[in-house]
Length: 189
Image (tube, rainbow, N blue to C red; front, side, top):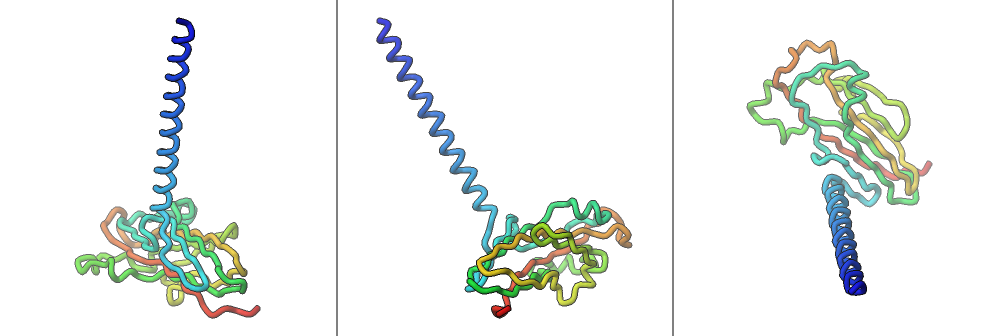
């Protein structure tokens, strides 16, 4: 009698353990693939692999006018990019921020946020932030740099509306941009 109860209890415990392990495997699988879906490799070349860590990929959209100070803008969510060099030589690359003309609807053309009211920050690895007014950036090039052989660089880009802009707060105006990473000829430095 005692052996029979003990055996039933052991079978029940084994079933519980298998059920718990099944849940752990399913949840780990779900979490991993959900993270994989959020990351999107949007640019591959013979030289570089570029990974954008946003669901929108390389697209940036501001949809309401909310002027903030630089300190608040620097603490806002960043658009994260990871660049990996596939070569055993250094590679020159550029990061550009340009208008996303495909995303601008005809009825929005008169409600675009002027570039002189936009501030952009770029941070490479653990270095300091570089802050620009978007209209001051020549040809939209935020960064020109070299990545070491087989190296990896992490970049954070933030964009916000400067505090002293002339636009009324909360008005529905838009900015649509896209970040482009272009690799240049291999440098022999």
